[in-house]
Length: 467
Image (spheres, rainbow, N blue to C red):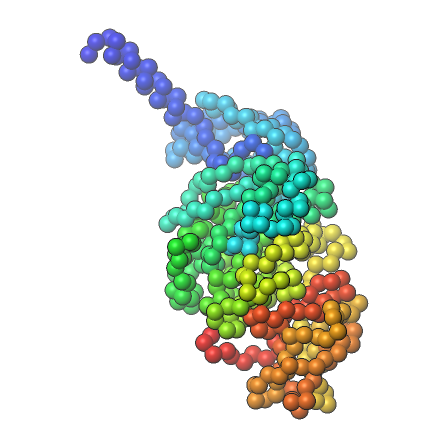
């Protein structure tokens, strides 16, 4: 071999050595990102084994040092200050990276199926009205593209962007209205991570080991109807879209999903409970988890929507969770995609402000059924969370049914007395059960003094055919 070839091979070897030596970052860590304030946040990535890496953030100018592991990975924990910025972060290995326009504030993950995914590009008028004044420097988005994997991944594609008329139009409307209200009330930067996929069941967002190790959940997963538009294998969306961002520090989770679990509605409670606990274990903290009750819709399987909403209501007992009702803001029970995303985002934000951030005076909890007492042929339904009394939108209380021991339900008459609904029917001499908005398409018209809708309920525990 002549000297020229040896020289060229040497140059190539040096070039390859330097190419391999570059420290690298996952896409979730980059320019324009928002880091969780007053927290220990993790930065991580890849580098050569034993490569020395130093990191310095402009908010404190402390130099943190680490080295690449034998697996060519590295991780470093930084302490963030109170909300503020913009800041920069420099990373030095055998190459140098500079992250700029970094804000410190509140970071929320917004996940679920199509009602979380819906954006201005879907024709939502609420978002179209926002576009002319959409530029908000302290509101940032990270959109995770639809991705599946058989095993937990370490990287997702994407980039942090500043909210403006272009980026907002293709970002989750619910997440945007949540983040906008949070920013207005807290006066802190807000970072929103969207991980949503229309038509997905909760099983695909839950680690497959949890679903497959539980006979009830595994059987329910078999009822998922495969389609050409979304995955159905348990854990596949979790592996591809949630696992890669788990090290990233967040304040909490917003969740809007459930429509695609109506075929097995009675198993949604243990499934959703298991999913919440799995995500919390992954982040190693009791993340606040606020979720949206599915809206009235004419489902293929009768009573599926009512039972799914009941399962969601039952999950409210999980610590640090909160549920937003939607039975008053749907416009078309034949459309599974209600257009009003503004009020959904606002109600989620109020849950976070009151429950997580401790802001006083925020109306966030919907009134709900407490107990029933029967006297003189009438059922007295006591409602909790109705301080100041209940209000009726319209002249007649709608979507209310009453039954005797024969389990035949009739439309009921009713009056409101402060925090109690008095219910009766000439067809029922001795009431045994009362239901409110407990059908797939029922729209409610009872609310709290603060305007939050009464949650759907039933006083009985009778079974439904097919469930």
